[in-house]
Image 1 (cartoon, helix red, strand yellow):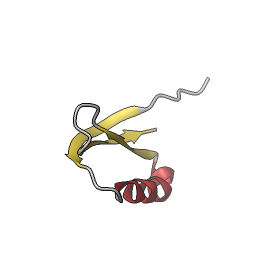
Image 2: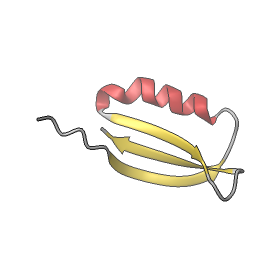
Image 3: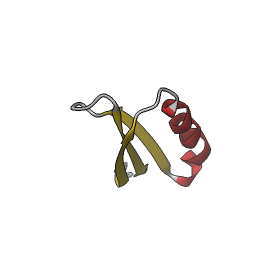
Length: 57
């Protein structure tokens, strides 16, 4: 059976910008072969901030 665990490597809170999703999309497409995945989510408490996360898949 294959282990499909996703490991969080790093998380940082940054100032949100409307174009950040383009960077995340580009990173995901470019580095998926390196078993890396990137995520971006708005901070629930402060919508001017975003949480950027790097995962190993």
